[in-house]
Image (cartoon, rainbow, N blue to C red; front, side, top):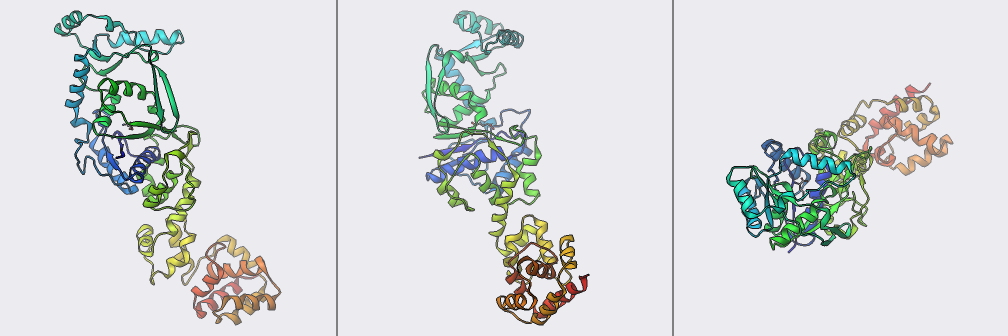
Length: 459
Ligand code: GLU
């Protein structure tokens, strides 16, 4: 069974980049009829907080994600918070140590830093020299007994080529000699991120990991570790990062792309989900999809390798479609505008709304005293007065096709010279629903009042 997970670190709120990772991971599981899990990677006590943890859950739920297992809903593979799994990490690092696949390292931070600096000066990629690998078990035991602080390093098998297939990037090859022995237990006993992460994925039986490309360098180390522990590794897929206009990866520090912020501004979750669904993923479906539709159409074969640019104009496109798909009740709740009677108002304007304020704007435009915007004022000032004389005679006519043809015939006007002023007279603006529908929205008396007002505005 396909099992995927989203594994955020609660060090900030969710932004569009990690929301996309969560979305793709969830859709993959649903597409395959599998399970989706949530795991909090909160081992970094200094940077993680309960507030961020709660915030993450709230952001994910708001977006529309649901998980089968996780810290709040439980499940058979828990605990789902890494801070509650320290014992497990300690056990497994000990196993590696006992099997001779890991060794204590006494190098100090200063020694490591100067080795690193020396490598960089020579233009080489810094990697651990292997100094403590050569200590005999007796030497190491003596130093440990003397209370010298030690980390635990994994002994990377030398001279091997590690080959694996990335779900997004295809076949990858890594020469193990480029890795250097790496720390799997810090001198304070805690597990580094990639160790806990790999172990949890294997123990929670995760089959597919979709995550940001920034984790690519962890993968070979994670595969080696799981291989040494004889645990089954998931298949990894690395998504190109989502970048802003300047080409910089979106970050938790940039609130403008934070889900919480987008929610406050009135962006709809389904619009965001549909937008993210097309960010680095190219489905055939071009229309707005609901959750089951997205899950059906999600295809890892359609994940791309090019970096994905955040583009608010694209998000706005999905927002318009998502808004148009709201029913009247949901639209009233979303916009905070109380519209009556029934759905008729919403049915008329739903395709002309981009932001919440537009709803109140249309309510005014269709109400008794529509404000005129500058463009409408100019249009009405320049309109042919003949138009109003004929229009007034037709105010009682409900068949707009007939109204239009009589107006054309009797005024000699057509196209924009006819319809632009008529629209401006009815609504005080130039954009909006079809003119025929607008005409019929108003009663004959309301049409008459608007035509008279427009006539009075002519020069
Ligand atoms: N906690 C990691 C992150 O937030 C998860 C990486 C992964 O998905 O493997 O980036």
